[in-house]
Image 1 (tube, rainbow, N blue to C red):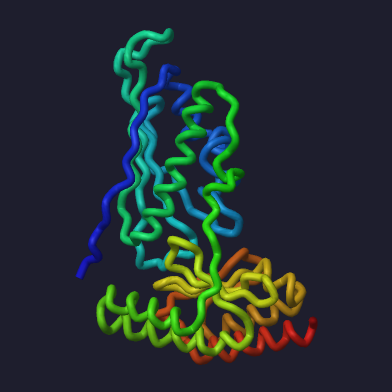
Image 2 (cartoon, rainbow, N blue to C red):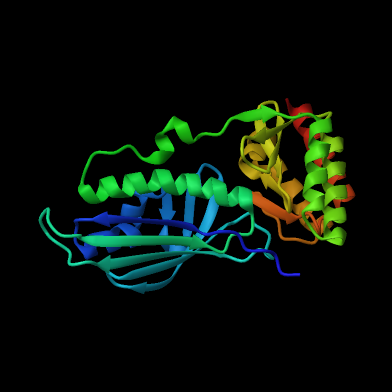
Length: 290
């Protein structure tokens, strides 16, 4: 059965500037870095709105000074999840170059959502980012939204009993066969690693983070498991981390490199018991080094 698509994110605002200035703000790498994200690499269709969380944002259509359309998807999403689409429309309502008239109408639609928590998270970012965009178009001083403390979500430690309750809820929201496999894999991973560190949940998000000595090493979402190589390399060293990456490639039959910032595994396809043994060996190696 096809997943139910959620509501769209929709905003619009008026501006007294010229169409070319808005178009530049929506398509220029340097301009996007002033209001949309601190890291934007247009040549790679890569955006990072938060540290360590890369998004693929690819320009798929543009009509200069009128329309801009991007695909948008976090790199850690499972391949089965379709792209979301961002559409910017610039409409001239008798644009004045003074303080009279309606000016330009900028309409923004971000649709294609299947995950309610991800939609709500991105909606909060849009609200903050658009404040920056409006200030940029007015040429007013502004502080980038990612430097403001009011966006940061709280991180709370969560115990196994609470994890189990949340995993049971996730299972009910998916088809029975897939949900059962994901539930079993997630629960085995949580219980196996619990003795080595602590699990945390960010407020408003359906992701569990595993921390070892105050470093986030792994993350579990409703569909995937993610390794964070930056922190793993800090713990293991570059050479040892690459050895563990090669071993993981062979055991899970997936290309893995510690040179990447992260590696994402589908929980449906993951060989959970083999991965747990790998993770236990990795953490014991870290503890032996420390």
